[in-house]
Length: 481
Image 1 (cartoon, rainbow, N blue to C red):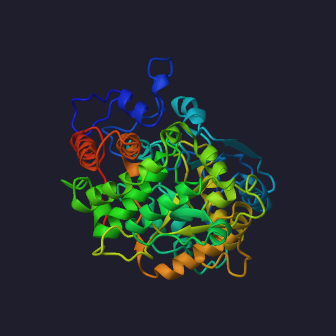
Image 2 (cartoon, one colour):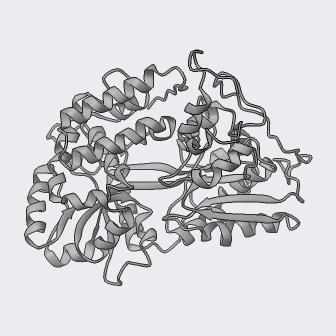
Image 3 (cartoon, rainbow, N blue to C red):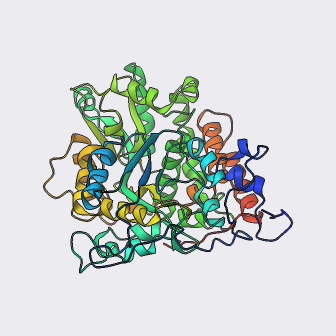
């Protein structure tokens, strides 16, 4: 690799490694990230490196039925039974001669960094969790496969339909980097404030609809000996910045979040962001400083024990906590409260977004198998099985028809119905610009635990966004509503 920091659009080896979690290897003997390195951060989508079999109606992606397949799954809130008990058996049924190697981990970058450095990569990766890899940097170095062949392939359910036609609107677009779909965002997650419906019924409480009501609720819960609201500052500050961004979008419309993604001038110092940060900063003191040192499972378990009223998260929460949830605990979701009387979006507005990223490395030994594995995931059988094993909805339309839903998922369905068209959009800067996202975690904690004001939060984030914008080594992305 011969990139230098002085070359416009180039990315140095040290910068690249830092962005995808390979810093520990920079000084080591592993010289190159790729066997054949892309130049100037151009992100050209390479052809699949593994040799393909002949394509046919029965095998549109050209899978070699004898080739082994290696799958790496992030084993977090979704578990990994959906892979071992649903998708992998489906693949094996289609390709009985193929050996499948399953790797489950909570440390994606740490597990895969030596392998990316040596060129020995798996065929499909669930890139998620706190230790995920920077997909923007991976694309800039030609490390990810363009998933267009997957989305253009015939669906397993109905060969007359392309895979893309069986998915919720916006699914393909949500995984685009540099204008091409490098990422499959498979899980449709609903984000909000989670609570125990049974506890609230017992106490006669209802979720607050405005921040004034929220502050009054906090006093009520506090006097009952219950922490009104809490999140885990140690490893899940992003759960909280989601709430701030959702509030900002409800105040000023989804363009607020689009501007943040696009690194628009003044996006972070815009009034809706400042108002949202100020509103949430008033909730912070009700947590107590100790929560900054806790991880998400510790805080979630405290909620299961009746010690915390509201917890910010996505709809994977119920499944993640199933082994710790007592029988009398009923998960339910509430939207974030309205901040001002003139919010552009109503209280019922809620974020519903595709998430949980699945990628195929360009240098995989069996990339066709990786694409086929994703096509299996995007069948109704694969998606339904995922919901049954993980308790979460997918982007596959109609896959959950007739399924009996858990209390949390019933609540999600009701919240989505109440929101109607008032859906808060997703954010893409989180995967586009990893260093900006890391800074946001830091400043979110500083805001919520009382070290900086809302104005300082906005100024610091604007400075971080401007630094990203002015860094020629970072490939810039754009999106529209």
